Amino acid sequence: MRPSANASSDYHMETPLICHLNPAPGETVRVISDLHLGHERCEVPSIPELAPLLSGIQYLVVAGDLAETRVCDWREKGLKLREEFRQLCRQHKVKLIELSGNHDPDIRFMIASLWEGNTVIMHGHAIYKEVAPWSWEYLRNKPACHALIKQYPDADSDLAQRMELARAMCQLTVPIMRREGIRNPLIRGFMHCFWPPQRPLGIIRGWLTSGRKANQFAEQYFPQAENIILGHFHRSGTWHFGKRTIANTGAWFRHATPYFADLTDGKLVRYAKAAAILNNASPANSSLLN
Image 1: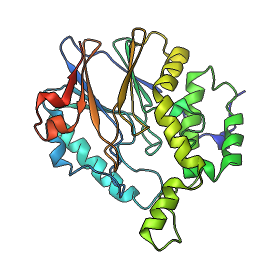
Image 2 (image 1 turned 120 degrees about the horizontal axis):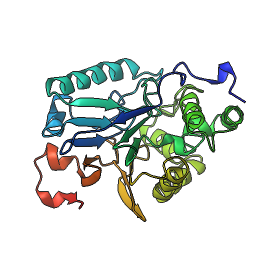
Image 3 (image 1 turned 120 degrees about the vertical axis):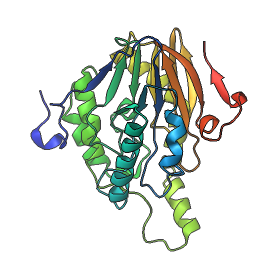
Image 4 (image 1 turned 60 degrees about the vertical axis):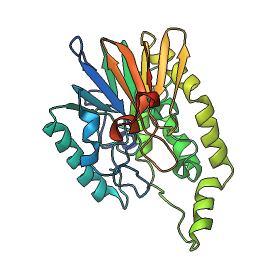
């Protein structure tokens, strides 16, 4: 059973799901995520100031949510800044690979597979069928979300259907970016973040279980992968499950910290705060992995 036509998004999975890369020996692939260009809480200083991130690498993979491209107040600005970022990568002769996240479902690829599946990079929203069960979009539209999930009955075993569900879920409802109708900014911020209680509890649960959830997802769909790099949770960290390393690159967002992950010859060789490059910070602020 395939999903009905009205369940699938404008970006149907007729296009390839996975971007396959096989970097040459010694080439470096850098991974970042969740820049949220255009968003009012984005903390990217400016596009030109990101140039140091492009030094000494051949590939840059953005693991989702590069910019705000859903239909919302910040879409126009997000699209403009995304094009500036693409131009910056071209100027530095760095191959840019963009992956789709829940805030930019218009991006073609959803997964990058490197070195014949040794490393898998994705946004991470497909880990949950609801995409973000702590989000206002889900909490206010549970019946519609659950109805959509039922139209993808093989999503627990079929990778293409799981990803198609994720893309469709991102476009099911109008994005809810802030609590409207509350004049006091402090009360508005509190209500947006902490009410109803399911929202903060869901966020904390997501943070605490993201590594384990990512490993379970990898066991189902990418059992051969030794490295899984993702974003989505706005919470940096690394986890080890047997021979597999999972790394989250945080976010360029208020109350979050952006990290980057460098991979060479199928190995995760560096995982560090982006400030280690942007601010020319000392090596003490980075983690070298052998």
